[in-house]
Structure formats: structure tokens, C-alpha cells
Amino acid sequence: MPTNPPARPQRRTGVAAARRGVSLLETLFAAAALGLATVVVASTLGFVYARQHRERVQLACAELGNRLALMYLDDPSATLALPQLVAYDGLLMRWSLDESVVEVRENSTVSAARSRQSRNELSKRLLVYTITVWLSEESGGTQFPTPATPSHALTRLYDPISSQRNFDTVQRQLNRGQMSEWTREIIGTNRTTRSRAGTQASLNQGTQ
Image (cartoon, rainbow, N blue to C red; front, side):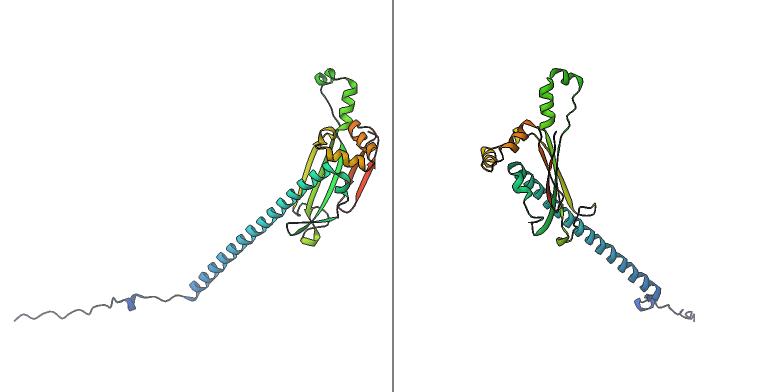
């Protein structure tokens, strides 16, 4: 009578036999990778926030500079009398102003078409002024503008004749007894240029 061969022992293939533990080295690598990812995310968020804050301050500087420019066209004396620190958008800003006479250089064709008198009048009459606004030290900026300080510079070229945009501006100057100053601005002779260095205002008298 034939007999069955003895059964071979079967290997255990269950889940418990196939599961492998995590080594200490792998745990350290995973913790280091998680920490590195956290640092990268935190640094990125910090950079985005700082950039957004700087752009918001620069926009505020540009808006304030534009308002100061409009005020200066209407009433230069009152604008220069403003305080050193100007509050805007919850921040304290400093500002400076510099004005100078424009030197007009015409080419030969234009120069030949103009009379010498009209050319000289135009050269003496045109002005250029630059208003710089920056974040003050009271709000985390600096006392003087630096490349690292949020700031904005606004430069405008203007003709005093066309810049008298309304009758109120002329009437205000006449009522203050500034007839001679207004005449110098129109004619362009012996005129006064103005400047403000962020801490003080000054008038520079000179023959142009």
C-alpha cells in the first residue's frame, strides 16, 4: 500500500512576519527633513511678508510725495512750513525737497528759429524740483534716506506760467505781498530756488 510522502514545513508568510521596524538613523533623517522643510517654509513666508510691507510703505511714500507736489505748486511757502515728520497711513514719514533752474540747450535748427530773447527767457523760467519721501526712524526707518530705507523720489519739470493752474494761487501770493516773487517766477530773473533737507527748509537767492 503506497504511503504519502511527509509534508514539508510551510514558511510563515503573514503580515507579522513581513513587517520591519524603523531604524534610529531613518528616524533622524526624517526629523531632519521635516525641520528643513519647516525652516524653508517659514523663511519664505517671512520674506513675502517683509516684501509686502516694504512695497506698502513705498506706495505710501509715493502717494504722500504726489500730494506734497500738488501742494507745492499751489503754495510753496506753506508746503515748506510743514513739520519734519508727516503722518500718513499710520506711519511717520520724512521728506525733502530740492529745486533748481533748468538749463535749456537747443540744437542749431531750433536755436536759429528762436530769437535770443525768447531763448533766454525760457532757459531762466523752467524749474525742476524733486521731492523725496522716506520712512522715518520713528516708524522703523532712518533719519536720512538710504538704499535700505523704503522711499520714493518724485521729480517734476514745470513752467511757473503754466503751473498757475487757478486764480486762487495767484490771489494768495498777491494778498501776502509776494508780488515781486511771483514776478521773478514769471520773468525768470533773480529768482529764488527752494530746498528742504528733511530737517530744515531754506531759500537760495541767486541771479539766473
